[in-house]
Image 1 (tube, helix red, strand yellow):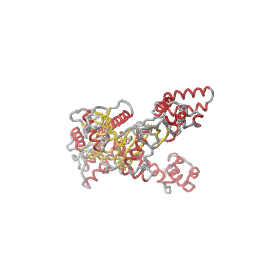
Image 2 (tube, helix red, strand yellow; image 1 turned 180 degrees about the horizontal axis):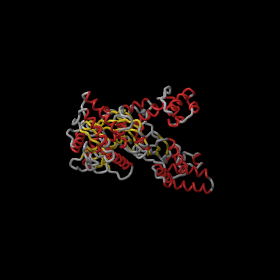
Image 3 (cartoon, one colour; image 1 turned 90 degrees about the horizontal axis):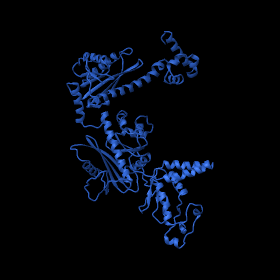
Image 4 (cartoon, helix red, strand yellow; image 1 turned 30 degrees about the vertical axis):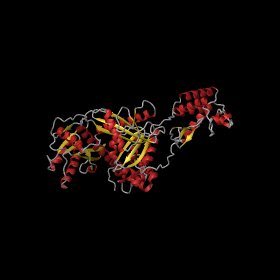
Length: 608
């Protein structure tokens, strides 16, 4: 994928957190990455020079990309981790250790302990998380320890052991961090009350905890104990930003498939997510064309069945927003109202909405993947609108550029079958025109282009677009007539503001409907020639600023010119300097050359 091709689709990528995936021409997954802002992160691969050899190789192989949005950067990290482990793309660091995520576990035992773990054991214990960093987990556990006394020992506190008086309280009891259930000082009911408070905190229900901490903070502040108050404020701020639930990695979830559906006037959009071992490992959205306005339940049922087969899912549960029929009677259909499954459904729906909007934007920009028949239909509409004798499968467009009367250049872009043909793009330095003359410049480049095509006996375009007024169109027509090509191709002008199209000799222009496919194609061709021409002109102007003015002086090279411009900012300033001021930067001998060049030129003499 070239930088130009990426620029066509960049505006369809949302500024949201999520994961992106790069594929090669064969559809092999090359790389999975995460981003706080998908558009900015993906754009960075194509809009800047990459120094890393591995990254340059990756960018060279990218043929297509897709993305999955998430609710937060935290979820993007977890989804990226799951996808890398599942697919192991060759440009990602291999993640072979399955003990990546830290969790907080509420142990399935008498007087359950609460502690950090990276290992999930299916023994009935309750696991909360995952978390993206151990530091936050430990900070949360310390906060719980200071506010909710729970035991930290690994003793077997069975009723029989407690009744026999097998254990004695430890230092934690005397410090106030434990209420001594080991010696019967705390009842099961009281312990479970504290445990329920812990669950509320770990699941994000932290209002009561924050209220308690804020009260303590105000007490310390009133007593002028500002350092203690600041510690509590830090805890409150952290709790406000704390999120315990993740939709994309959830150890409470068994294997399941999630699907949602949206529709518009012409199409259905179905998003599918595969959840395996509590992690989302597949996300796919498809578009289905409406035929007979089938019920959404029938379409969702068919699409879900198809994608389950495609991804070889054996999950015994499907999570959907509406009642559907499934082919396997053993599969449970769930329509959640609240909870973790509802969160997954909302995430699926969000991805379907993004995909639907993505398709709409691509159609607006005329960059959606189309069949050959669809491309031909747009060209047929253009042929009919402009009354062209031939179908315009080959279109070329010209535009001139100059900057304040300097560095005149021209550009030509070529579209074949309604799509850019980058290899046929051309740019031109104006050779025969003195000064700035848009009409003469257009005449020159049109003559050069089609003389070359005729000399090489290459096919001519069916439509030539001149981006400019009637004067430029007339100048282009003169060159066509000179070459004896009148009538061999249609020639039209495109008004820069009104987007009106006019033929040579016409008094009234043609105005296509603003949002018609033919008008969108014309607009895209015009924007492309502007982009290509401006890029080339910027390069030419940059080179001219350095080379024509300073490097054109005999004995002055690129380094000296660069040193002067860095110090004095412009050639205009350099012209006014004394020889002594120049000597300070480039030395006496070169300073003499530069000073004599500008001063002799000023006095009317030509430099030697």
